[in-house]
Length: 402
Image 1 (spheres, rainbow, N blue to C red):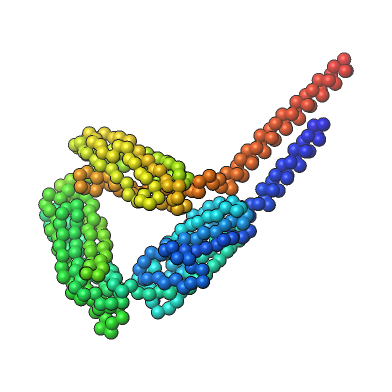
Image 2 (cartoon, rainbow, N blue to C red):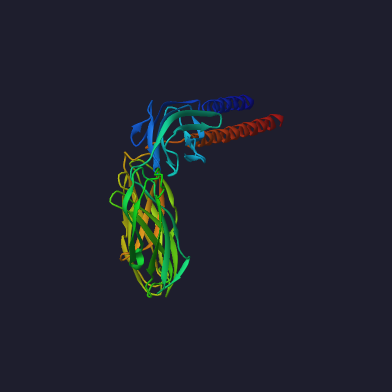
């Protein structure tokens, strides 16, 4: 009887493992589609501007279960790779998935050629590829700040000199261009006139200008790191570039520390989660703080508790950021920025990540874990039964002998 029970159990175990193996491979994808800026790429030529970041939305239905699936996009034809890819994920047969990748189009890529956009869905033994034609064109009005050169350290009360190079990347001339440099935290700024910049295709090639701007750092500036903000603009367009500078001043700009338990959270559509932060005041005096979160518009609602607080010297307090995701939120990674301010001064910024998942979705690894757990329980029960039957048989034989 014991041998028969054990034999039936192993037949059952073999059957379960065979079924799991049979559905563990992604065989194909169905209902495949690609959108850029809400436009389907099926049978169309995609028009892309140089310098822009291209959001590529890929949707497909899995044919078969699979693990470690990855979606990638690449534009071929440029001198270096223009590519992006998702993190690896698992798929379940019949479930539809949508993923986003982002391609940064170089500002110096040739606008006279067509390029090939390749989209791939890859698994261990499977690759699905679709290709689309990309037509590059130059924006009509585009400026670029090519470089900002400054000393790495400047003393409070001294002059910071910034050498700035600006280029016209547009297809039209840029008239009456101005360049502004500022340090917002210190309240200093200066603007200079850069004149007209011809378009990049001009025979004269006067599409670039170099300007020097001198900013006097206040003598009361506190020691620390600040952002130098450079803006090039005219009536048609504007562009900004930032560079960190160090001021050797009278003290630290901030003595605030933020501790995070978790930076990234997984949350389903229509559900909520929370991030725990600890704010620490390391200054010699008490400080008042205000906390707000940006980046949730259109896909979630954020609440911070508390949103305002005052901490004594060397004191700390926990702050909770509550995130409620919309039931229509896009599947995939979303980024949040927590701003910690004292008055109008930005003290700290912390990045948070929300991995939004489809409501009610259970991945293949979870299913496998459940099945294996059931098998383990059945195995233990079977072994206990077999051991018990063996003990009873020995006891009966001893009674009959005597």
